[in-house]
Amino acid sequence: MPRHSKNNTALSFFTYAESQALNYGTKKQRLGRDSMREFDACYLCLQRARDPVCCSHGHLYCKECIYENILAQKKEIKRQQLLLEQREKDEAEAAKRKEELAKEALILDFERQQVRVAPTDSSFSKSEKVAEKDDESKDEDNVDKGKQESRRVSETKDAKDNGLVKGFQLDEDEILAISRREHEESLKRLEEERIKASKPKLPNFWLPSLTPSADPDKTTSAKRQTMCTATESEHPISIKNLIPTKFTEVAEINSKNKSFICPSCRKSLTNTVKISLLKTCGHVICGVCVDKFVRKAHRCFVCETKCKEKDIADMSGEGTGFASGGGKVVAQKFDVAFQ
Image (tube, rainbow, N blue to C red; front, side):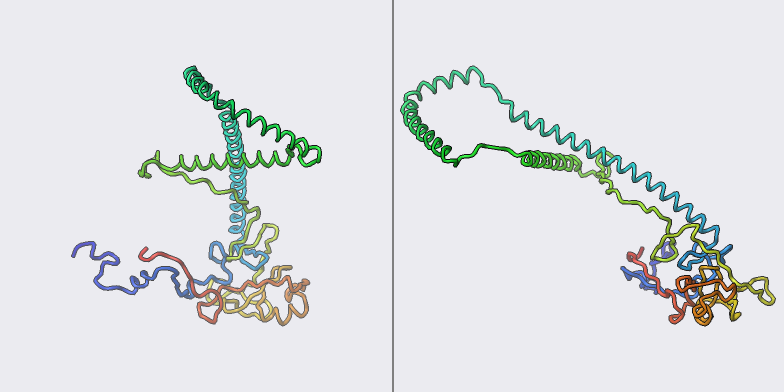
């Protein structure tokens, strides 16, 4: 058999994987227990947290991992701010250049309107000949026009005496509006000329000289805070607001590993158990003991530290993989068929 017959999608019949790959659009996959994060695992490295710390929303991290993440975010924020400032400077310079070009275009248009081409000698001689022929006919017309003009002058004098005719005046606001309108029209013409010039004259767009260039996007404000990215809904986070987390450990029988238990009921903590963190002291207690002791007494069961309702954060695991175990059990992804 040739080698290519053993490749994927080369069989004479459709396999289950190939029929699933044909389903274009949003794809769904059922998640099992192996896809669920442990309750004591770091959100960044997905291993058991070393020197565990939590944010104000109960998301667990290794101290080293979250410090590195926050420092990396700060470096990225600083880099984005520098890029934003440079882009704003470039946009301001480009706007100034456009305004200068628009002013030059207005001046050139004004000069073209003012400058007239002087007539030549031949045109003068031709016009004199034509004028001699028309002098006689114009004399008669001038007499009639003189009478009409005298009537108009007398009518305008009467209208001025009656206050009906007003003098021609220009307001400053009107002048500014006209100049602004002309300036905007010149800018629009320059933009249209630039778009026409940017279009390639030949269809060989793959050549470097004819490659179309896209305008840079408008400046957008960069984020100025470090964010907790444990969930889809991000929230601000800082090093000084991290809460040192205190788990109660117990040694397992015939094993070097240690497991975590609730300090009040001594129950093992797993993904099936609801767990809460007390922000004031950092102790981790199961949800049943929190409802029985902490919420009623407003104190920590272990160290007797005062604790309010707002100081209790849920830090339960992602679930057990079962539909009733909580957490996200179905993953969705948009993809193209056979990719």
